Length: 192
Ligand SMILES: CC(C)(COP(=O)(O)OP(=O)(O)OC[C@H]1O[C@@H](n2cnc3c(N)ncnc32)[C@H](O)[C@@H]1OP(=O)(O)O)[C@@H](O)C(=O)NCCC(=O)NCCS
Image (cartoon, rainbow, N blue to C red; front, side, top):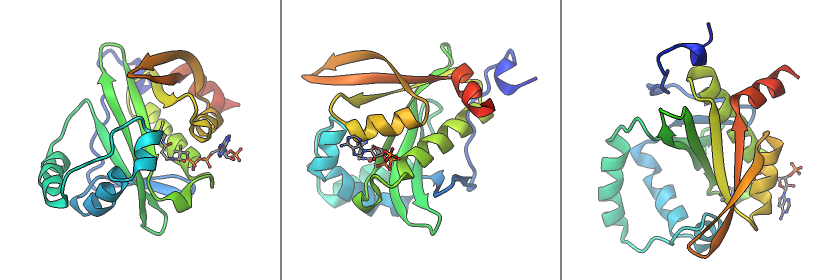
């Protein structure tokens, strides 16, 4: 019997120091030494704009205080991971979050902070690797994401990975495309 067919919901488990390997990247749990990169990326107006987020406006020491409590806090509704190249360079982050056990669904998000790695297939590899890990190791039946309507690079990346648009969302003056990849469609892609 497959994991997702069991009566009891199978949750994602901590990686316990292991990594999830893709073709060009590997995913690992967040660690305190990611703080410099994460601070720099959250201070970057271009990255904030692409994510419809507010650019950070706090000192590094204040950020660090908050960061260490987040890194050590485990939350079963949120599964944040760092993206590394196969050589071990931290280039961004991805997350499985808004986990809804009742609906067996969750949202995924990605940010490659190091712009040298944009448009070279890293994003698609991250999404494919993350989605495969989630569907292979849990009972989720649907993964979805949202992206700004003008973020064409992100949309192309997600489409390449099998996500399709199912709706739009207007919020705080932004328009988002909502995209999803259901388990059954992921399985069809895997077997084709
Ligand atoms: C969005 C993001 C994850 C995509 O990862 P990536 O490694 O850059 O994407 P990929 O190279 O896998 O795929 C991008 C595709 O879009 C294409 N593309 C790039 N710019 C484009 C544009 N302006 N319009 C249309 N297509 C574009 C690329 O050619 C590529 O398609 P191809 O493989 O057929 O050539 C990454 O760029 C990123 O993190 N950007 C900053 C933050 C962000 O936008 N996050 C997403 C928030 S929802």
